[in-house]
Amino acid sequence: MIAILALQGAFAEHELMLQRLGAETRLIRNLEDWNKTLPLKGVGRSGLVIPGGESTSMMRIMKDEGLFEPIREAILGGLPVLGTCAGLIMLDRNHLGVMDILAKRNAYGRQLGSFNAEEEFKGIGNVPMTFIRAPYIEEAGPDVEILATVDGKIVAARQANTLVTAFHPELTDDTRIHELFLSML
Ligand code: GLN
Image (cartoon, rainbow, N blue to C red; front, side):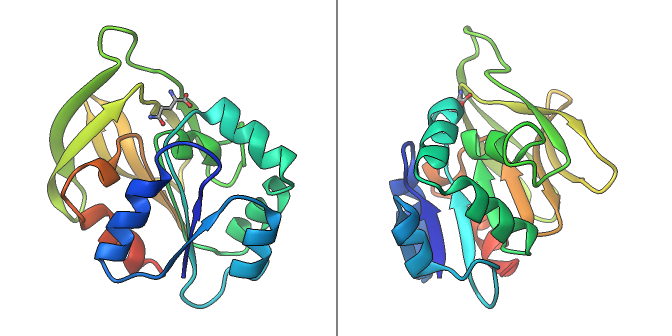
């Protein structure tokens, strides 16, 4: 069962892609949805997706809904999580604090606000990458495995049960990032 945080942003595209891959999904809009979907500590074949969107709003709604602490605890308890774009920011040291990374928000400036790239992703090969006012990872601790870079900037990484991309894998036809995530369950 994959819980998809659906407070705002690009959650529907993740839902479609995961369903295409045969995963069962539930949208999480509030604490009740969360409590119905997942045990407090991640066990079995559960996972969580934190989508792209706007990290400041997502953070505020997550706190208002009482979801911040339960989600943080579940991830620290081992729940596999995929964070894309704003979702990457949510996992960093300054937000949920479950990954030893520091995200630089809106890192590519106005001119390059949105762009496509195709780069090597460790273990997968060349992957199409769609960036929308994206962050990159400006600091990564020693336990963080760097999975992809664009122009020398880290755009994908993994640490234990956490996987993040600065780009939007749910906006392409390429399902391999989601398959990698499902393999972590
Ligand atoms: N710029 C957004 C933020 O800082 C992230 C953009 C996205 O998720 N596409 O939250």
